[in-house]
Length: 295
Image (cartoon, rainbow, N blue to C red; front, side, top):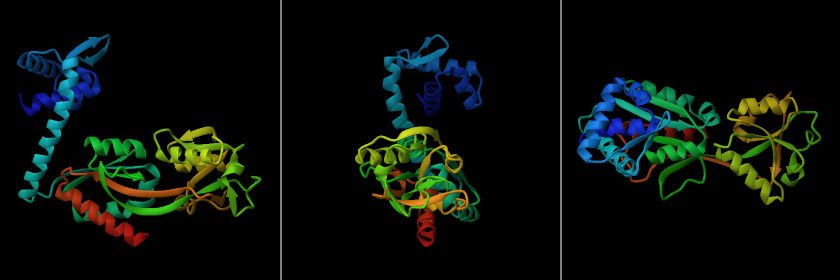
């Protein structure tokens, strides 16, 4: 058994296809099929079974999957440590950012980091908070930004934003002239919310349920600008972070405080007790400094 065997196995398991795994690894399908067959012979078990056009893990494959993921993560950690010992300023950092967070807070951080470390590949992934947290925990991402609270048993973190959500309505709306609105007053309103992958959606629904109603969701999106545009043409009401609201067109939208307020607090997270490369630690330090200065 070697790392190549494990890498091929994990790629087939992830994609449920020998063809797609071969394409992702830039090798031929016969090569990966032969390697997996040799691997099965070496272990004395069958790892995959065919179900129509899909490739599924056997019971033995499920056991190996769990162990292989841990072994590959350990191998990556070892590689990172060796690179750091030789002071190689190269490699990559994978950072997960919710869409509204990336555009609002990180352009200057990204620019400064690239200028300081031109040899390091910075890969950015736009995911909702739930997926960011899951992929940081699994090691698919090195660092991520999520909506607090963060699981302190799984992640180390630092908070860089403490704001609240604001009600967004068009000027023609019955509440447009108000400075503050009780959440309970919104019980009959059509809501424009973020997609189910976004923790902010759960936060809003939970806040409404505490006021005795479940919001009627008419549209869901992953983009805050699309949500605000739908609100501007009176297709529903939206609850957006104060930071985002400051960028909206006040001629087309009105911004109103809610009672009780719904907090919007963001934190950068990384795996607790997981190895952080020199580059990842530099990213965290730079982001902490620049985001604190911009707060």
